[in-house]
Image (tube, rainbow, N blue to C red; front, side, top):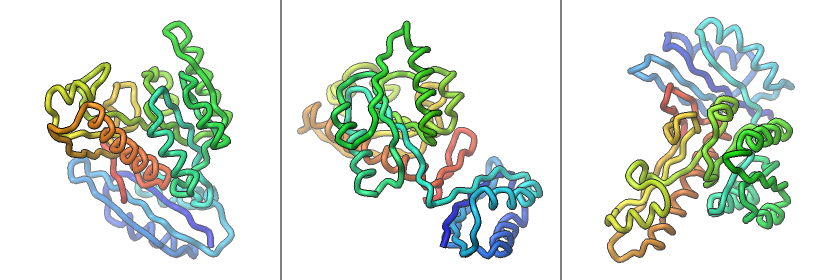
Amino acid sequence: MQRFILTLSGPDRMGIVAAVAGFLLDHECNILESAQFRDPETLQFFMRVSFDTGRLTSANDLREAFASVADKFALQYAVYDSAIKPRLLIMVSKFGHCLNDLLYRHRIGALPVEVPAIVSNHRDFYRLAAQSDIPFHYLPVTPENKPQQEERLLDIVRQERCDLVVLARYMQILSPHVCTELAGRVINIHHSFLPSFQGAKPYQQAHDRGVKLIGATAHYVTADLDEGPIIEQDVARVDHSMSAEACAGVGRDVECAVLARAVQWHVEHRILLNGNRTVIFR
């Protein structure tokens, strides 16, 4: 059996669910999972359907066939073949906990992706990349060479046919040009102290202020720094007995878990954009 995923969004109208079900029935498809959401504020409708079929077909064929339904209801939609693993490019700087976590999940099959490249502005993790048999691209960034290095980055994304770029604690700001080129295809992770504790040593700053909650946020990257649509957030408690380094350790664990969930949901096509927010069918 072939398994596919259909996602769609558009103005809420009567008959969309019936039309989708009728389309799948006509194409001898069996619905395995279905979820939908109507936003009462924007009056937009969102839907994700996982289905299989015994017919010899392709995502392109289903995509073309569904166009008539989409046109009737003014829907934006996509069809994905579940057998095709999304291709993931990971970017990292000098903190490797999120990179290591993603590579481990990939290695044991928990994260259904291909990882054709790792990009970094430091050399620290080239051995980790080599252990995973993944090409490591060292692209040091300075104010003078940043435009050239970003073009090299985009070349790698194109050449490796990457579907998603993950900033796994990559400590460089992407230019508006890159954000536009890769819109909806870049996920970032950062601590949730912003804007309270910015700059160097945020966990030390938080410790000095007696913070009781350590958090992390994963979001899509836009030209507005750290203000893209939020995908996932989580927190963990800390207390007076913990050092700044212990708080940072808690933060690293939260960052790994939050980023992994965000990437998992993206590659499973569970996230739909709703303006500057997200609809996530978990």
